[in-house]
Image 1 (cartoon, helix red, strand yellow):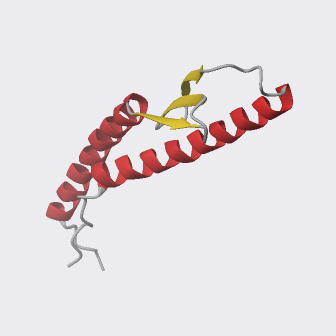
Image 2 (tube, helix red, strand yellow; image 1 turned 60 degrees about the horizontal axis):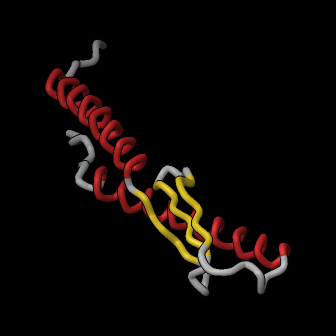
Length: 108
């Protein structure tokens, strides 16, 4: 018994694959170009990170004389961790914006 081939479904699947490939390219560009900035509680440390997770800048403002090296290291570590979480949030938001409009293939 031969199976009937649904040409329309195959064409739709190919179109969907092409659309996904295009959206993936848009997503990759968006993730690389969107940045998020996070600050330490006292605003003395700022970390800028892309949605891809790449740290692009670290800024320290104010005097460091009132801090020990260990305290400064803890604060930097905390801000970097927060930046990583912010990058994940930005990536998820972009993913929803770019891929959220896709609909499943129709089953007959």
